[in-house]
Amino acid sequence: MFSSFQPDAAQLMRKLQQKYHVFFLTNGGSEIYTDTRRNSLEEAIHVCLEGGLQGIVSEVKAIFRNPGAIARIKEAKLSLFTYGQLNNVGEVVYMQHLMGVEGVIVDLVDEITRAISDNDSDKKVDQLRKFQRNTTLPPQFSKEELSFLLNLMPQLMVNH
Image (cartoon, rainbow, N blue to C red):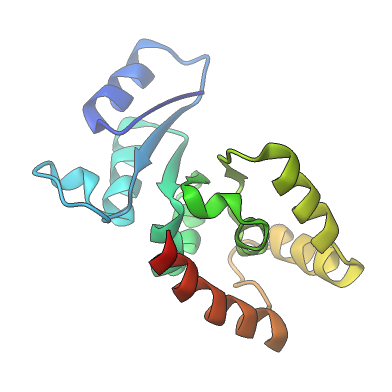
């Protein structure tokens, strides 16, 4: 897989070869650039569709600030990965898994793998499988999961 924060470079990589997937990296609007294609998840979708790219790698905070973007990315038939410090928190990675994020870039591979495995319950796995079969449906969170997410995310976003 190739990826780049530079839209033109990502699109050029795609034009030069068809063997490997090419993803557009974005911070999803955390910083503002003169090249407006780099300033939002919506722009990232346009860059991918325009250049025939296979997906987006977004800074994780952008996904939590704009969770509705996940459905739009899936509707565009694009893959979604995330990166960022928050991906070193097992609960954050697990919530992304439930939300439909397909991959995460982490520093602590063993720890995150264990955290994800420890969080698997039959109910959550069944729920995820149902969601994956019909990606146009939003994920169904229990009250406890929603409460956890709503309480955890603001704290993590400030601390990281």
